[in-house]
Image (cartoon, rainbow, N blue to C red; front, side, top):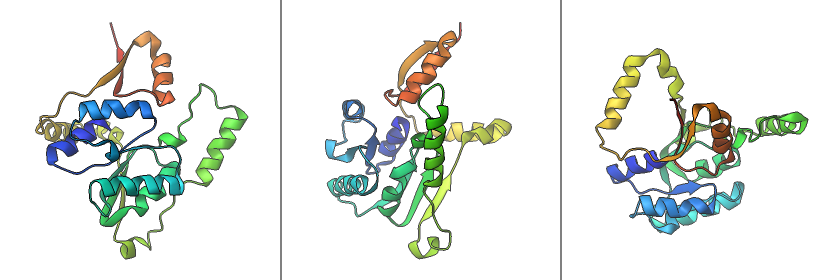
Length: 198
């Protein structure tokens, strides 16, 4: 998210940022001084609540809708963002944090919750896309593990933007990888969670 914002800033794009907790707003305002607090949405609930939050943030940048949505959360936040896209807009999915379990063990209730989320996952009807004039896309860089040449080209393109180094939020020694994963799953981290190897 932070690197996406940096890239948008480099390209002169008007942005609306979303965060999962109020504690992350100050970091965004400090790291991106050009952002106004009204451009940052603290996700408190999906559905109409989130849609109203997005529309208010769009008003603050005098935009009628989104040209591009970068979505790492999905869940109840997908449809509101989809509805706020302009014709010709692109919604790019690169994660599903809303469906990621937060504990070490799911247990029966965790599995039931995950099944319920799966059944209620966002759906887009391909036959409606031409009428809406919107695109849904996704990517996962794991596919590049078997295509080092493509990965190198993508990294080179990113390096050409001269972006600031990614923010390292938390560092853990490798033998505390489980603690690092728990911190990441908590949703309270900002920046990268890094494992160090000695």
